[in-house]
Image (cartoon, rainbow, N blue to C red; front, side, top):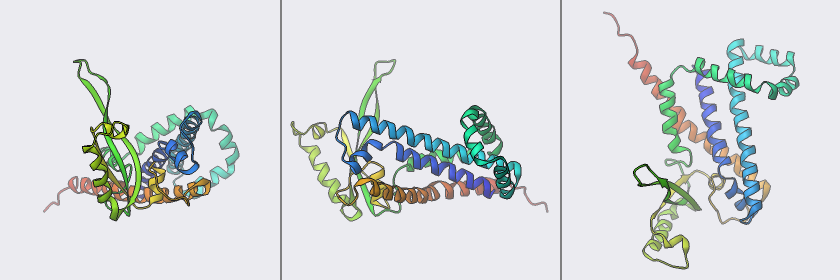
Length: 273
């Protein structure tokens, strides 16, 4: 059971971390490296996003393969001995050539390894709502604007829309309500020269964060010149790593364990008198 929980926890955590990191590369380049809007920003943001997702996929697949090998050898000592015997360099060299085989093994392993599919799928789906921020434990809030954009028409000619977020900036917890009230005051004014505030069909919302550095990685702006450059970027990634680890424990691992415990309790055999 402990191996199963550890594997699922690491899997969900890595997906959460790399998704949050990779989907906000454009904002990160603006915040940390002062990129201006244009071709270079678009090019490097897509390039970095591709690299981050590639590393994330490799990390998730590696955990699956290691878990699969651990199950076959039944001990970490035998696993290390096997890797040492065959040579880790050789393993790395032949990995790309056997990618299709590895993917097949991973899919097969997922089906064999999964013990509580309903509990996992339900908990993972609920966890999607906590992919960013922490509504319970927080010291800062990221302010963002949520509005609807038209994406097309359905077969009946009705407009179909989807919600879109536009991140703004980070404020301390004690200032968040005052800031939201100030931003909402613009909704009653229609400035022709302020394109952002010309359309009143939006709402100003907040998202809690334990660290301001994590909110920066998630694409919000923070007025602090000390958080600029490559060194600050790496430091903020460490803060984001720790906060998203905490969030995964709070909003996935604990509910997942409780869900499994409930299922086991309900499926227990009644005591015979």
